[in-house]
Length: 164
Image 1 (cartoon, helix red, strand yellow):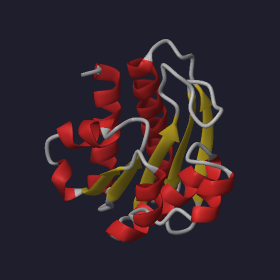
Image 2 (tube, rainbow, N blue to C red; image 1 turned 30 degrees about the horizontal axis):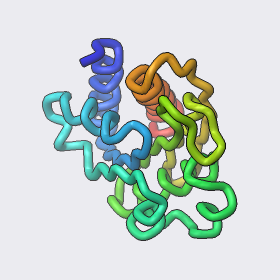
Image 3 (tube, rainbow, N blue to C red; image 1 turned 90 degrees about the vertical axis):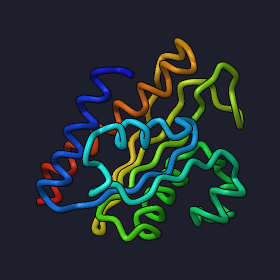
Image 4 (cartoon, one colour; image 1 turned 180 degrees about the vertical axis):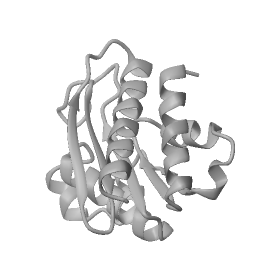
């Protein structure tokens, strides 16, 4: 387990507890890694509502409610897909913040995208934040861990600045 990521996950859980908030996750290329880090923190069950790993577009549509038009025109690896994944998992779980990640971990490309292209998103009731990451494709695990690290950093910032 990466200590830097675990420390950030610990901070997210601490902030959520402190502010009496809950979170839910929707992951694709990270395959549940974000959820694994969050739930590795003792006491996370009081703030973690739901985690969905959705590799296929069918599941992104049927379970996470990503618009089929979005998937057909932009694909699974897009800012709009990440946005809908985060917002819909938040709503599905009745959570205060929904977190999502979708992209290409590698080693091969997908949907015409090179490895390392990842979109992360965080949705609150009032706003959705989306960030495009172009991670150096040094390996599949490196891309996955880097995406989780960046999403946890974004989450800490949102909790501290918006969810007061």
